[in-house]
Amino acid sequence: MNDTFLKACRGEDVPYTPVWLMRQAGRYMPEYREVRGTVDFLTLCKTPELAAKVSFQPVDILGVDAAILFSDILIPVEGMGMKIEFSEKHGPVLPEPVRNRALMEKLTVPVPEDELSFVLETIKILRAGLKVPLIGFSGAPFTLATYMIEGGSSKNFLNTKRMMYQNHGVFGGLMEKITDTVVAYLRAQIRAGAQAVQLFDTWAGVLGPEDFRAYALPWVKTVIKELKGEGVPIIYFVNGCAGLLKDIRNSGAQVIGIDWRVDIGEAVRKLGKKVSVQGNLDPCALLMPPDAMKERVRDILDKGRAARGHIFNLGHGVLPEIPVDNVKMLVDAVHELSGK
Image 1 (cartoon, rainbow, N blue to C red):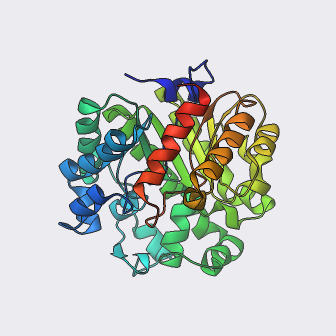
Image 2 (cartoon, helix red, strand yellow; image 1 turned 60 degrees about the vertical axis):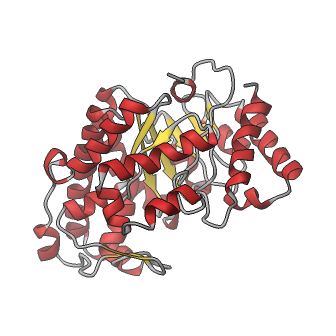
Image 3 (cartoon, helix red, strand yellow; image 1 turned 60 degrees about the horizontal axis):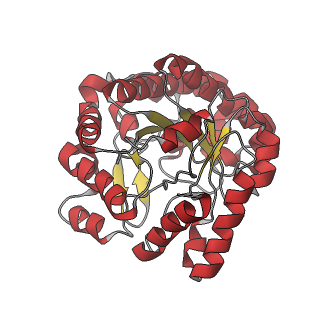
């Protein structure tokens, strides 16, 4: 087992900087498109053999140092009782958004071993065949709440913030149910074999520091506190984290994911030496000429050395338009420049 990723999460000495990529299984890869062409997205997520197959692909093709479970952050939301549709043009759509107490109270906290057993089966298949660590994941409570309240993505999150500010009881009740769901879901993933887990807070960056502290961070801290006893590294990734780093460092996560909008050296200084960092190349930098991209990689690696531990990643997911050869070049550059 190549455990470089896990060692970096824990801040231990490593022979080189490990690298994995958010959305490393995705549409930029012909092998993924071939599988995806046979089934719709939700069916792919819910068919363990196929979900495992596309999770293996980037490990075999790119040589990354960790695999991540192929799934979607909204899978547990469906388990809570909400209908979800996926559109190629518009992304996820939840046709009956939760905007009142009655709809909130109808939601349930699913038992992962029952309603979400396909995810756990995928993990077991992956663990049987992987020679690198497996990362499980979930959306963080605030990000899941935005989808459930807005009915999909949003530009200004008006409905979410209206509920936050005007209906504390409903918002708090919703967040409590989501948090209980995330804890149970991630605990089940870990017990099925996930060796690290990541909380994706894709939309927490739409909050100012005061609102982040009031409406998002407490629930993340609860999730992490509940999972600490499971003994695996917990990664917390906030997209749009630059103005929130001083609060994020108090989340309890062992690893903090950094998006590309902040210099990683500045992020390390604000986060301190008690956490490892993950990131943070701009996904579009994969379109740069090879020498220029390599210099960007070198700069991030150099600055990342100041952290307790550093895992190289993009600042967000691999874009469908990126040539797979460029992604392979990135992985090779990280390994070469950091000493593999």
